[in-house]
Image 1 (cartoon, rainbow, N blue to C red):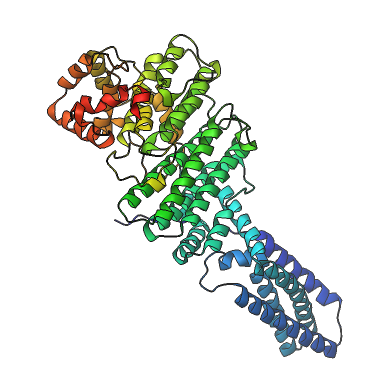
Image 2: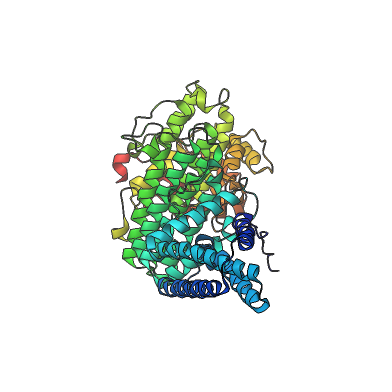
Length: 574
């Protein structure tokens, strides 16, 4: 069944036409009061009509030389709004008709009124001609289109998540059609201009959801053309950098420290998409279906952009830029929403992001090194349980049990989307935070496994029963962070899923919390937990563990055997 298209009623802007009507009334009065001879009227009419025709011809020539007939952005409607072409033709046509009627009926007031009207049309035509010249230059078109985009985004800004997508309304389809056309041609200059039109528009805070949705759509279309059609990797790299910097700028300028959930949701979804993008480039390159230069450009740009977003959430970044003077996440709910997105799709800086999360929730910096085996999630839980929390981040005393439940769910979503450990990882794509390095993977696992909140197998089974139960209390940290992320419409290609729909990952999230980080610790509770699971659940768990963990033949191939590497001393992991 075809989706019903959303139509917006045509807006009538009476200002210009009201002015035309007032001018015509004034001309009628002038024609009655100021009369010349018939010969003078004929001569004046001939001259005015010739000048009118010359202006019309000149405008047509300039238009034909300056605009591609296949372009849809700017559209004729936007050009007409800028140069007042229809108003000019309406005045000139009215004058010509009055002039002809006046001569045919030998009515002096009528042909005098026609003369005056043609003279006014000539004046309007000069103004229109000069305004058209401003569009003949790319800079003039750029200014016009930025104004059109700003006006449209400002007008259609709706409460978050409501209404039809902005990309289906107003001139936005024309803008995106022009972008798609430029992408198909591989016209880097045109693509850069179109993306640049989104940057630093004069908008109000209410427009942040609309501008974020537009950025997501533009970035997705550009990167899709790069991954699927082999578009130049520098174009995608530029789109990633420009859209990320632009969104960070809007968040800092429009939202401020008390901007609500939208600033967090905007940068969180951008970081999540970039994680998916970098791993998609890796996957396609490992299969031989993507040029290595394109893959490298996308991965490097994505990692750099995610690092910038992480700095935006750092309460105390080193040498902060203007857009980093405040963190969009000022409380535990917003910080959790951001971390949920940041840790999905095996993105870069997963463990590094925990440092900002730790500081927002506790008000203290974490000074140990996760790469050397520090268990930051465990230290965070200890701080919250002992009363070491930041009052600004919590409306009351933290509910540690609620935090435990939320972090188990967060880990499940992160683990479900870890990279395939057996993937062929080309050496030219490896970076310090994006590589098949065993020690780095161990550190990412320990970020989650270090949250040792379970007392044993029975406790894990009780948690499992509670986590898969339908419905959540609105007071839960997970539900509140879901509301933050749901405040912004995102691309349907990357839906946010509840961990109960990823049961093997949820089981793994509980299992790793039963594995002592001490290499000599007993695995008895982990074994008891696995023994209580039905065969189908164990099969799913086995497949997930096989996919995301490196094989260690000397230890065996069961889930617990393959997970032993997370207990290795960091010096032995290399």
